[in-house]
Image 1 (tube, helix red, strand yellow):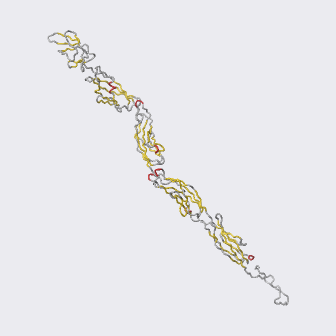
Image 2 (tube, one colour):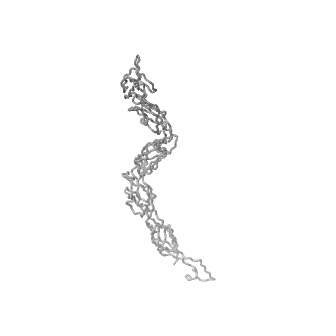
Image 3 (tube, helix red, strand yellow):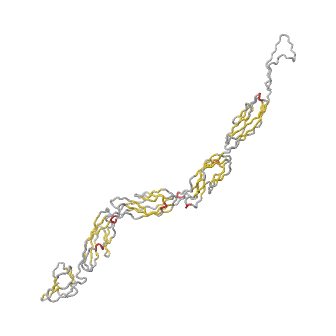
Length: 530
């Protein structure tokens, strides 16, 4: 500055501003004066002090040193406009340092801070203790991946000496892939050995997260705490259908952790995977059937062999899986095709030994079916009965000879019919068929297969005695017989002689001498032999 002094009635001093080192405010006596438009200032009775760094003396054109007192002659900060870029899913971003980075203040030592901000046209702006945050606030979710939209707001800075500056911020928001979403289904409870499971629509409200787009969605199983529980691991298709199959005889619980993924990628901070969800599959134990095998499936014995016991008939006896080892097993006869073949049994004891006794004289075939029964019950769909096993028992017949009832000797007159019925019994059950026959029988004698004997001796066959055998034969294997030898006595039956009619003729007086033969017995015969 230059000072010019004029002598008048009322003295005054005038300071002419030559330069202010690019500042726009001049502090004089504690009052800030705007000098941005240039021009001179009249100062009345100025007192050199803190505002001056020099001293006014007499003379014209004296330069006063530059005033440089802290807090005085302050220049306002310059807030420069900013451009920011974020993805649509950005959240509560602290942009303070980014906004201040290009702002400036020519005053050395001034500290700039944000003291005010306007609302954004779409997003959300928050200023707390000088920290400015920007949040798209869900207003750009309709953007497709790669599509952009803009938002604006203003902010004001202060240099710490009440000088301010304001700038505009333009925010470019880029659409990114949004994570898919869904609602997890209910925990699952299923009985052991329930077979393949399918739960339609288990996961619901399935969405790819982006409006106006159609993406391919895939459910991913991340972890399974008990894979041995399954023969077909749990899986979820894109429609939310849950499928799985539990392993045979397995029970317990498994925690399944999974998420949903789309094919939109993760460019520009996008998200293609949903939040992780978990659910539990609880497999409830149920009783499993016992099992066993037969050491033989067929056997033959003879009838009347008496009580039978065969050790180790049933083998490999099991109550089921290891968790059912404390159960007990018994055996039941579920089918017998020929009960009459037995007088007792058959039964199998818990150790697997079979016992039975065949009925007296009984033979034939019995088809037997056995099953094992445990004491685990059938609650919850449990099974306490094993698969049936079949055993065939053949009881072979031992043929018993028939018994011929006593007949005894017989007698008959010649030319008289002798008839009797031979009787016999068979001890076999069922009884064999019996057939009668004669051995060494006289001519004319016969017997029917049913035992009816008949004979009419001729005159020539008597008197005499005839010995022969009556035989009964069964049709068993082998054929067996019984017999009795009898004697039939044929007695003489005397018959009157035959005398044909006699005649005698004579001429004249012919004397007849008594006792003399005159031929009157011609043709007289005796039929008896001899």
